[in-house]
Amino acid sequence: MEPLKEDELSDQELDALLPEWKAPLAPAHLRASVFPNVSRRWWRNFWCFSIWVPAPVAVLIAIVVVLAVWRGSVPVAPRVIVRTERVDVPVLKDRVVSRTIYRDRIVHASPAAPGRNAHELQPVAELRPVIIRSEE
Amino acid sequence: MTPEKAFDEYHQAVYSFAYRLTLREDIAEDITQECFLAVIRDPQRFDEARGTMKTYLFSIARNLALKQYRDHRLESPEDGAPAAVTDPRTSMELSSAVAEAVNALPLLQQEALILFEYEGAALEEIAGIVGADVGTVKSRLHRARNGLRRMLAPYRKAESTHGTA
Image (cartoon, rainbow over all chains, first blue to last red; front, side, top):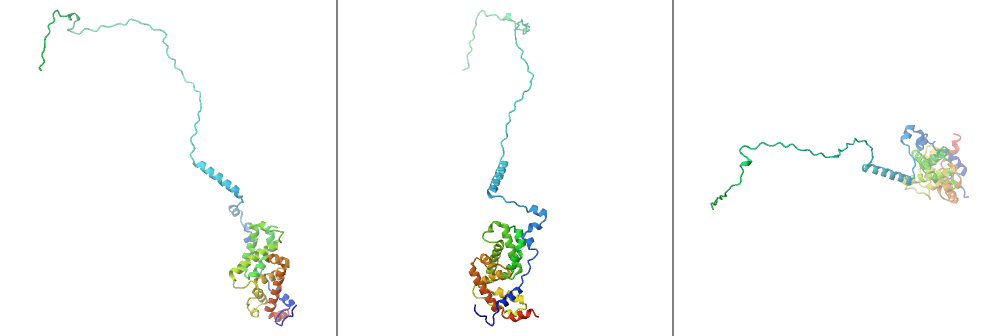
């Protein structure tokens, strides 16, 4: 070990000096800034509540949500429901012709036109043709 | 170990370590907070086989302080000769003088000295925290103490009269 110079402290002197430098105490609010959740009110915790979800699960949930939204936005064709109901309907029976009866029709003679008598219409005894020339 | 229990046990030590490295209470608070948030966010990263929770927390704090150091004090060398310092004789208090002297050490010596002298860490623990072997840590400690011996020499008399005044 090299000898101490005039302008140097010994180990003992240095060891006695070093503890003179004291660090300040850590501030009391340090805990609150490291663990803010402890000092939060319950309703603030409620709004800031978070959960850890693994990425694959998050992706799956996102896909399901997108599919659900997509299906909700597409109009669905109306479903036709065929339902058979038995209804009692009153039946009108047709009349069945079982026989035909003929009977004499009573003809009422119409009165003869005046001046026209069938007896007056007789064939001529002698034909007398009349030739009519045309103007051409 | 739960994050709450780790906080109860080590938050003061982590805060002191961060404060001594940065000399800023606000930055020490941020670093301490970040350390425990890292434990809460990713508890699987702590491997009990690789070291204790204390070692793990101090490693995170050390990395954050280093980042802070690099962002704001790039002009200071990380290792090698001590940087030029304010003459400790101008400090009004012994505490400030020691703080300034330690802070004037290169960062790698500084962190080794703080962990050993102030946080009571063993050489193996320091080696785990800073990611170096024990021999390197010993060497850094030796150089750090040599530097402090010189820088704090003006306080020899003051220190010796400190108790009698």
